[in-house]
Length: 114
Image (cartoon, rainbow, N blue to C red; front, side, top):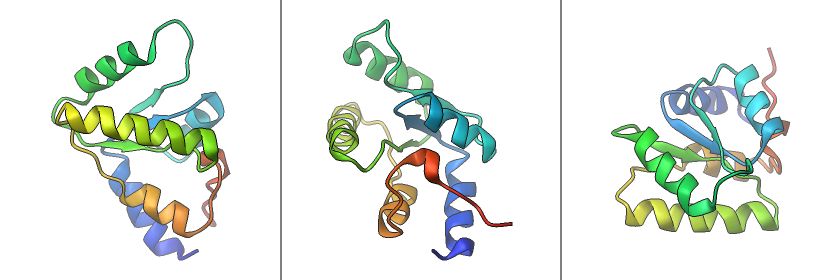
């Protein structure tokens, strides 16, 4: 993995609202310096309600969907991408594409070599 490119994409994505699946993903991104993170799989509300909340939270900010790259995560990604696009929410998937290209399977596995 080209560290410089990955670092550049991570820095850019820190300005966005980032959607993750669970607490481990949330913690991994927190550890990398992300502040604007939304956990989509928290219980208590329907997916529709969560999507509405994401839409409100995003405002004019872009959104980066970082669900895992397993079957469940890909399915959730496609659903979120479709729903948010229909609501004219601005998405940026460049970090997701780079992680996929570098065979990262789970968001909590993102590592930065110092």
